[in-house]
Length: 510
View 1 (cartoon, one colour):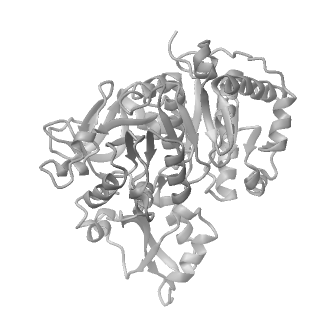
View 2 (cartoon, helix red, strand yellow):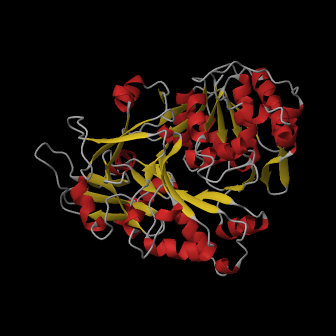
View 3 (tube, one colour):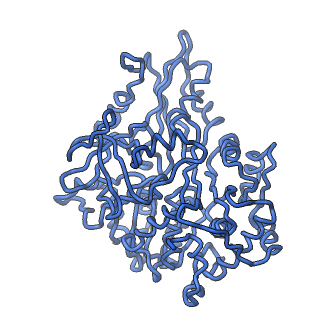
């Protein structure tokens, strides 16, 4: 029998069961307690009418409850579907409807958001806190042991689609088995103390959490990222390893006195979602004095599949150029660069679309067979990322074929923002692009053509977007122009639009 995610809490190892699995503020859970409480969740889900294959929504800040619900759902044969709490009620309602879920576990501070998103549905909302604890207490701690195999889906993470419709990425036991192969390479072991500060509704949050639990580590959960609090937690808990996006690392290093703290326990820092500048890297290395590694991956690859090793972080040295690369693929990952038009594999140094083959690749998208076929046709994942492999096998990403913007650790598809802005009565034409940002890697910019004879106020359009889009999707700036560049067939030339903003960055994505 292959890897089963449920075995992370079902272990018979007495020493492992006695260890602390999760810490969040004053609350601690041992591996044994996580096993017992997740069995209660499983029974409570079944009592609530949740059947094998059903989706269970989680709308919450980072917390221990996420993993209790995840393992409980797996034990009951259901699938956990975390929801981005930064979305608007209307955006969450789309996910509620698409998932077909009948139950949502929501953090108490998000009760109003949960109620608005599930209004008019028969979705039951269980609030964390007293209601959640009573819900568990009323259920027996008997593990129902729903059958699992390699193809059993355990997680469904939503990512925006190129058409603006969110897609549920399916992740199964086989995918999570491949994820665990990176545990040693990312310094996860039974003696590790990991920091879980990235949101669990992203693979960059849930993935490291599952890696830490697989390794039997002590995993410290931070409900939300606040630089001073995170620094205090890193130092007090003697954290040995952490995964953070570059923007978060830069914020931590910028806190006054950060470099004067005791970081002797810290063994490694991993980062991803965007490359790091040499200047920022120097500051972070000087602050934490710990080896750093970059990882590249996506939801569809269950997180990291490429890694830039600590020895390749050489600011000011002869290999400084590698900081613009994502690194080399893991041994169990195949990469190739192909001509997007012909599918022919390209030689080293030539830019094309990145294709990936590994057991970490998703089996597909929930109820979207056409999108699944388009992404996975021919047995390779078509990432939509453009780039090249150098002669040493290092991957360099240069653009996004599908124009996706990554701001911080959030993915934004321009079509979603364009649809909102285009509905404003003063807008005749609009294009949304990502532009470089020192803090977030890139931010959203709108380039807008006003209707003839209309005086378009960018501030008014920004206010319009605030009412209709999640914060990370809103444009941070708006340029008003007379016309957008288009090719003879009428397609907007976004590469041409982006070029002036990226000419000093050495790449066309964050």
